[in-house]
Image (cartoon, rainbow, N blue to C red; front, side, top):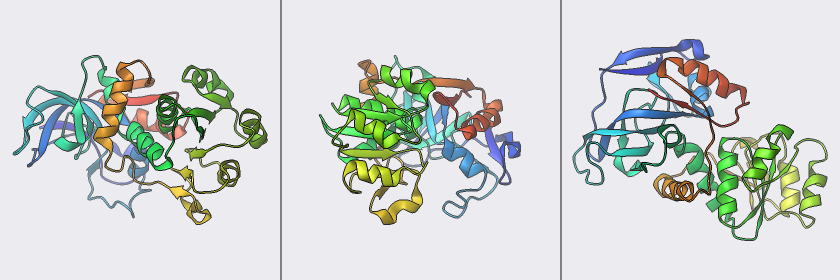
Length: 305
């Protein structure tokens, strides 16, 4: 048996229970992990509350979480990349808010010994999504990228990955996050009224591309600053596709392993920093999700089962 966080009905965090469940078994091409860390993402509380039920119907009771880091304790048929005892991280196939989880071997990479568990468990979704959207936007050296909500989970990853590519990054954020953005190599600007003027003061000719992780209504302004919609991409304004911008809804989009290897290399070189805001035991998953739901988080939230 294995402990796992589950819910039997949709709702706020009060529906969560920590229960004993049969430990999952790996199938062909899969491994089972003793989970050491599971990242908490906004997607998780949206699933819990039923906001994704039409797009992703679940058989209840169900679990949560997909960002995982752990130690391989069983290997399925045909797996040669990993062996029992290997430390890995990536995306799980079964819920990650658990003591035990199963993952496709292809969705995992080796965890460097120098990367703490809480950091390893926080990388896959935010980091993989950031890597993928920069590819879609074709952000290149010496270009200027504007990121709305640059201090958030995906925004901070995207900012650092873009800086590593040699791009100049302008990031919107509240005043309290400006110093942190500067430390990441980002030129911070306050969001809200007058944003266009503040961006043009830094980039008089506009910007080459825009990543919107905010959803505060900046799409028309973004199109104007980028000189058209082609290189404007949003992760949150799902109703803005008719304006000709790119709407990305598919997370890492199958790029997870490649993205994670690139991210881990930058972490090893000291060129990418992953702030972990708080860690929680499995029994406090509700507290972590409640905090995530506020949107006022200064880094990643991670469960340590």
